[in-house]
Length: 307
Ligand SMILES: [Zn+2]
Image (cartoon, rainbow, N blue to C red; front, side, top):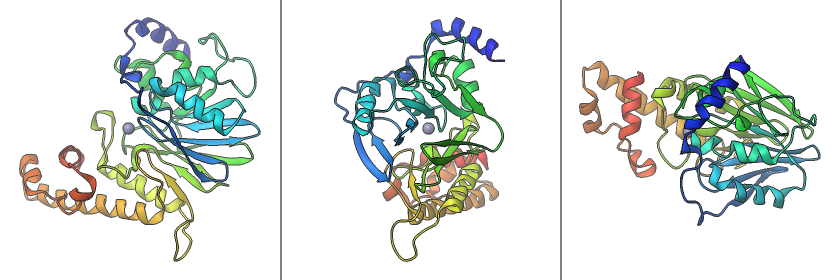
């Protein structure tokens, strides 16, 4: 199967999408936020990057845009001298996988040497749900150079790796933000990097063209909540790194789930009454959340269409 992808990739790469490198990032700085123990969050342009450091090397979750990669590498060098060994992608969108190629090339496989014939040098291992692999290897729009492709994909519910003395569980969230979302649970540090199934800065983007749905997004919120153990009566406990926005805890994700639930129920009730999408948007079923999350039209449209 990989051979087929490889040939396709080499042919279609002539048409390689500029989406992964788009934008001018000259003025963007990368901020390093310590999260807990050896886990850090990098904020720059695009999705947040989660970093785990240790004796075995560096592991990151998501890669922002290709144009950010020099700054990302500089930030990683501040955190550790060790090589970049693993990249985990939460989903296929360009603001989360755009830096895969330069960052994978800057890293190296932990086993040493290169086990793939389709790349010329050693690269970091890339892990993602198989839907991510399919989308960035076969679609014109998202096509990526083979050096940035997942070297290891999974299709069952989860994939586990053990790295830097820590168990890391990668869990698929079906039909949520896309059809290939993963959340990544660092079990010793007690931190979950969740990609775009949860964010704090806007309503969710449900990518209906890539299999996203409101019910899947709600299920994903519930699976994050299921993994969180709070500290009774105070902040702390399991920490959640969102796809976009600020570091969160249980209370934040509970508020998010409540927002999703209320808006789903309101839109469902309006749809049951026979209201059209335009009528639903005009009725403003999200009005009490708009001051916090901003414009809701795209979100309401996706909720309406996937109910
Ligand atoms: Zn996304």
